[in-house]
Length: 345
Image (cartoon, rainbow, N blue to C red; front, side, top):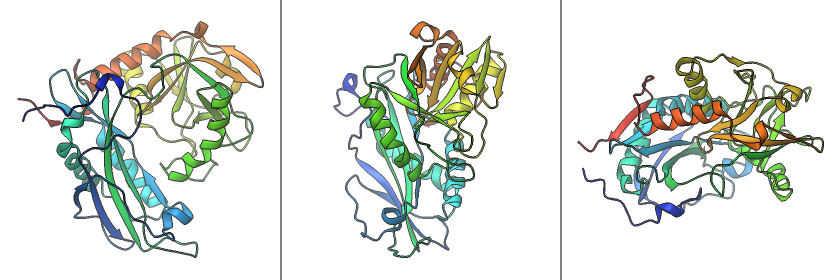
């Protein structure tokens, strides 16, 4: 198959939605199983004003990426893990549990039909957004009777404007992202809407993102609004443990494995307090969108703490280099994370 591309200014890509050729659509009743579905032209959708997702936020989504690699292939990265997380998230929000194989086939079908929108090697990636929501109308608070699942995608560049540079973060003291035993560990729509106002305020103050504390005791860090968080101290990598209000990030898990199994570093998942955060040798965040992003400054109670002299740290840099090299098939994939969808030969 020819890997000829559509006419896009690849060097100018940001992290914005760009219309592609098609998207995948399927529906399911609350007591049914996901099956069927088909590609439809990319475009707007219709919803009842009483739809469950609009009135009660009954919806979840995933985020994954495809890459045009050094071997001239188009590949997916750890799609099985996204599929399993979608199954968990749908079950938690009383949406018909998504079958992982159905999810995966829908993603692959959509990617194959839009392969020419995947940015060329080292020019970006294809961000893939599977999303499912309550479509049927409801006035009373309940799980609605019908659901729609869609997969759309967009070629993207760097998540942060201006490219990769150490982030300037703020510890958020007035708002929480999620609560224990809530839906913080599901990829639910509501988790992200809760973070929008604190993020908007932080950006007006000159910050890139905010760090949230646990909502029970407010003495432990949890994550950013759009990424997991890591610290490095004396060569040991630490990240907050999955306590029920933290998302089990795919990139988080990947960095833990790369650090422990390739770099042979000690990796710990445990509680991290604010003092440990601001005194760390390195701080970085991870996510499908941000990949691995170093942190240069952290403001806590109006005191600015500079991390690693506001420079990317060596461990964060090495983790990012190895992760992206695996994703682009520049080195051997020791974990079986890469799944070719279109191979040039």
